[in-house]
Structure formats: structure tokens, C-alpha cells
Amino acid sequence: MTMPKSTGHAAGPLLSDAEILAQIPAARERARRATQAGLRAQWVRYSISQELLFLTLTHGTVIGLTLPRIPALRRATPRQRAAVELIASGAAVRWEALDVDLSVPALVREAIGEAALRVLFASEGGRSTSDRKAAAARRNGAKGGRPRKAQARD
Image 1: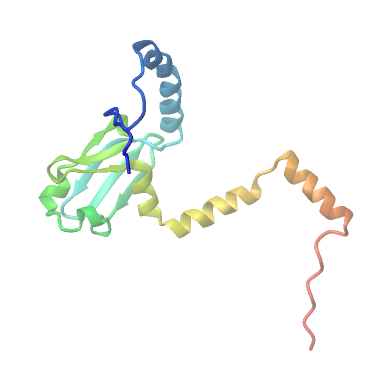
Image 2 (image 1 turned 120 degrees about the vertical axis):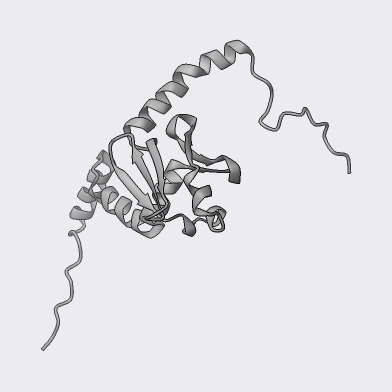
């Protein structure tokens, strides 16, 4: 079997300076939207006494989570956990000595819980309106609407 020649660039071809510069405005806009949505942190601190990592998100929400639930930090000492810093303009946190980087959205998901987030987003999605949803409701109404629930017999 012949292996293709490697270019040494796993992400694809190199970009020219002009191509890189052309992408900067869109990247800045994505960062602005992420910051507004609270998907970035503006402050991080680990409390050794409480054994909690506190993240202050860009929209002001403060989240505290226990780090032993995170496999990469389970065996870390409290002092190692306290050596945390924000990186990537608040998009992630880093423990340099442990060589661990975690994204802020992943930490928020861990703090709230995957199942709770699904319920929350499903509930919000159910309340949303759109032209397609309204049209589907009209079609359903033309068929007689929702079936009535069976009444319990005594």
C-alpha cells in the first residue's frame, strides 16, 4: 500500500498573508458574538478551601464547579488546581503544569449537566416560533387538531 506524501500540514494547505488577513474580521465577529452570549470567561479562580472552580462569564453569570468530576483533574493536588489561568481571550482555561486546557462551554456543560441542558434547550426550542412551525400547526388544525385525551372511567 502506498501512502500519500505528507505536506507536513495536517490542517490543509498554507494560507497566504492576504488570506489570513481576510479572515480576521469574521473571526472577530465570532468572538464578539461568543462574548455577548456568555460563552467566554472574564475571570477564573479556584478556591482551595471550597474545592470549587469559579468562572465569571462575560455576561456576569458566576458558575462554580467541582473539579474532581473532570477526569484530567482528578488526581491533581489542590495547589495544582489553583494554578489556573484564562487563555484564548476567555474561551478556555489552562492548567500549565498539568498540560490541561478545557473550553469554557465544556465547563459550563459540566457544571449544569448534559441532561439538564437538553431539557432546558428543548423547552426553549418548544417555545420558539417560526413560519414553518406556524404552517405545521395550521395543517394539524385543519385535520382536527390534537386528539383528545381519553377520559378515565370510574
